[in-house]
Each structure stands twice: as structure tokens, then as C-alpha cells.
Length: 428
Ligand SMILES: *Cc1c(COP(=O)(O)O)cnc(C)c1O
Image (tube, rainbow, N blue to C red):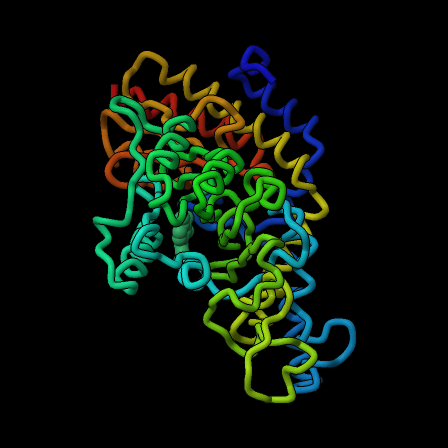
């Protein structure tokens, strides 16, 4: 869809909404109010909205708990003992994996640490880790402390990828060149799949191939990618990944993360890991014997029994994703974000107040656009918020706006554009 087709008019936005095959999903979510009016919510990259079905899913587990108590673990189809299996078909579709390659568990930063235990095994010769500069702080702290845990100095180990001078995002060729340059010293590429600050999607397939060529592994933090852009982790030959479910996956604040482990590691009991009883062979778990025997695939990395109430909320959202379909969501997403981009350029054009730093090429971005604010600073963001626009401000000078295809409309984008038009007059 080229920009040529977009128009800055209410009629156009209304027509796009009428023709949108996914428009009915909007009414399945609760929208927050800002200053008494329904928000223009562009913050699904930080916390996705609550599906109205969530309370029903949680109530069901509450009543199982009330009525069955401990028997709920093994009672019927919904037995808690197997609850992790329920989310696998949807996760496999969202992440592009086999079902045995994924499992919902823990929280994101916890999983990053656990994955490092298995996949970062530095030697005197091969110990370096590549990450993008300006990675999400939790990922930086994780790497820094993991490296120290191995008795190494982060400055000697962590190689940060920098955009070229004057550029905001990374070029794939430069990423691959750095991987080749580190060569046999490189142990791991561990970076975002979609960068939280710039909104750039990295070429995970090419990065994984380059890492493998030099004998290293490639793992990705998909916090901003999962549920946002179609993924094909298995086919891209990615070694491992983790994500969170409360951003684009709309599963509720702090809700469960998940991990992906490529099939080639599915039956590698020799692979080091920190184990718990929930990763132990399911058939023998209650023999309560010593000697850890990992389950096949990603399940073998589980530590503790599932958080049933959290998984219930997660499932409510995953069922909506299954119904909507990742490919249809992506189609709408490209258009919706394209429309936002078109209107921002149309309105802010020559004012010099702001600049979109997210790549223009739809295949290098998801739904988020990051706007670098050249004049007015956070006052621009505050002005929009006063008018009901919920985006987010990231220091030092970026506003992130993420129109999501599940619950945002073309009219949301149009209404925002009118607010933008008014506000830029103030900062001109
Ligand atoms: C949101 C986000 C996190 C948050 O980590 P939690 O462990 O879920 O609190 C970490 N890393 C990235 C890249 C994120 O986008």
C-alpha cells in the first residue's frame, strides 16, 4: 500500500475503519480514560489493553480452585498439571516455532538469565557477546552481571553495535560485518529482535546465519517483537529467545514470559541449566527421586509449577490472537502505521520540530513509530497527553507511538493527527 492512497480526512479514516476486517476486535478491549475521555491509546508497546474476556478466564480457575482445591491439578481437561500446554499452539504461531520449542514461564529478565546459563559458556578463546548499543536497561544489567559471574570484565566481553554517525538505526551489513570481525572470539549475539527505542526490526535470519558461520550462537529478546511482527524463529535458525506477554500480547501487567529453544537443543540433557522439578521428566516427577532428567524441548527449562491465574489471563489474549491471525494483523498493522507515518509527515513536514527515526521500510519495523523531538522536548508529549493521547516518553528525547492492529482504529490515528496539527502551532 503506497502512501499515495492515504488522505488527511475524517471521511477517509472512517472508510478505512469500515473496510477493516479486524475492526470488531476493538470492542473486545477495555480502553482507559484520560481526563474523563476515552484515550487514544498508542501504548500497547508498553502495556497492552485488557481483553474483556480476561475476568471470565480467571474466574474459571478461581472456581476450580474453590471447588476442587488440590484436585484441580489433575482434574479433567483443564488440569493445572498440564496447563502450560494450552498456550503452546498460539505461541508457536506467534513466534513461528514448533510447539515443543516454546513454553510460557517466569518473567523476561529471569528467563534471560536462565538462557545465559545454557547458552553463554565462555572459554579463554571464545567469550565475546554482541548487543546493540542502547539496549533495554534490564538486558544490559543482565549481560553485565552474567559476564561478571564468569569472572570476566564486561568491557572486554561486550561489543556494542553503533549506528553510523548521523544515523539512528543499524545497517544489517554493519551488524554482519561486526560478527565476522569478532569471528572465533565471538560466543554469542544476544540482542533485541525489535529495538524498543527506535522501533527497528533486525534481520534475525541473517544475524543467526552469520553467528553460526563463525561458530557462535544467536539469541533474541523479543519483548517488542512478539505479537507485533510475524516471526519464524525455527526457520530463521535462531538458537533461543524470550519475550514478555504484557506488551503486544495484552496479557496483563507483569504477566508471564516465555522461552523458545531451537529443536537442535531439545534432547541435550548435557546442556547446562539451572533446574527445578517442573523441568524434570513429567512421568517421573512425582516419584520424588534424585537425578534431574530434563523434559524434551523448551519444557526442560521450566523450574517451578505454572502460575495458573497468570496463565489464564495470558490465554484469554492468546485466544484472540488465534482468532485474528498473525498475518491479518500484520496486514492491518502495516497500513495503520503507514497512515500514522503519512499524517505525521504531512503535518510536521517542514516544521523541524520532530523527526521519525523508525525505519521507513515496513519490513524493518512493527507498529511503533519513534519520534525524535527536536524542539519543545517533553512539553510536546505532555501537551498530547492533555488531549488524551497515551504514548510514551523515553529519555532523552523520543516519543513512541504504537497503533496496534488489534484494538486501534484509523480514526484513532486521525484524531491524533488533529491534535498534532494543533500542538505544532504552539511549538513552531
Ligand atoms: C519490557 C522489556 C523488558 C522488561 O523486563 P521484565 O523482566 O519483563 O520486567 C526487558 N527487556 C526488554 C527489551 C523490554 O522491552
